[in-house]
Image 1 (cartoon, rainbow, N blue to C red):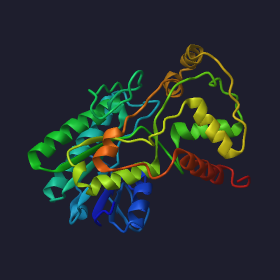
Image 2: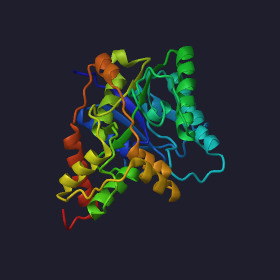
Image 3: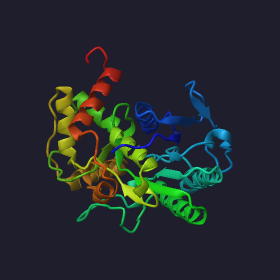
Image 4: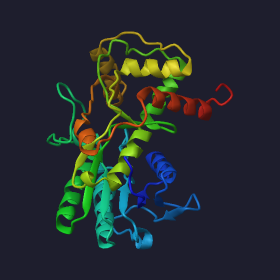
Amino acid sequence: MGLAVAKILITGANGFVGRAVCEMLRLRHHEIVSTTRTKSQPSDVPIGNLLSKTDWGNSLNGCDAVIHLAARVHVMTESKSDSLAAFRLINVDATLNLARQTSDAGVRRFVYVSSIKVNGESTSANPFSSFDIPNPLDAYGISKYEAEIALRELARKTGLELVIVRPPLVYGPGVRANFLRLLQFVHAGLPLPLSAIRNKRSMVAVENLADLLIVCCVHPAAAGNTLCVSDDADLSTPDLLRMLAKAMGKPARLFPLPASVVSFIATLAGRSQEASRLLDSLQVDITSTKSLLGWHPVISVQDAIDKTVADFLSRYYPSNS
């Protein structure tokens, strides 16, 4: 599908997803305004900390769309005494401030990157979809949902074309956090008690997310919609670990323990949240996204895993890659 060239502002442009979005935009000859907290590249537009009173100045002038990626992200160990208030300051108040200035500047479309955690933490019988009743369970998910509500009200009042995208776990070259730990465990050859796990989890390669976000900036049918995104190919935790090991040329050292036992041990170790991401199912239905936009993932899970592992090895084990 041919898409019109547009001028697009990206917040969080030097983050994991932001870098992928900017690279893809450049390859497709879109004009980019890459806003960051501090100037690290000559093309960056530094706006300081993301606050409820941040002045976006002239950065919005002439833009056709905004992709809002910058956020206070979910963390496994929260240091703030009132974590929900801390999330709200950035994910709700600062987001709404940007959206207001976006509308005031005459920018047509605002693409908000939310989270599948707005839907909940795990699935059982049915995958999550954009039509579900939201059920966020932690401070991060609640703040993302509250931002969605505030943005919809602003869009209703101003005519701003709002698109909300809810991704699950994002992975790809340069990935950090939980996925990086999995890569490290597999590379170290650590035996993991996960071969008996029979879950299904949706993920999204950073290339697939970046492609969808760009489509959402320019596709007429995207306006006013909430869209889920994934690779459209779910994996069990053992299957994912085997794919990672194969890409590294290593054996997957997995042995069976009942999920209840693994969960109990993880709880005793204070790692219950991390264990749930390995044991529980979290599936995402992207049927409506594909149908509405004519969109399909641009990279397969296998190719995305291979690229992620190759990047991991070159970064952390360059002498062996």
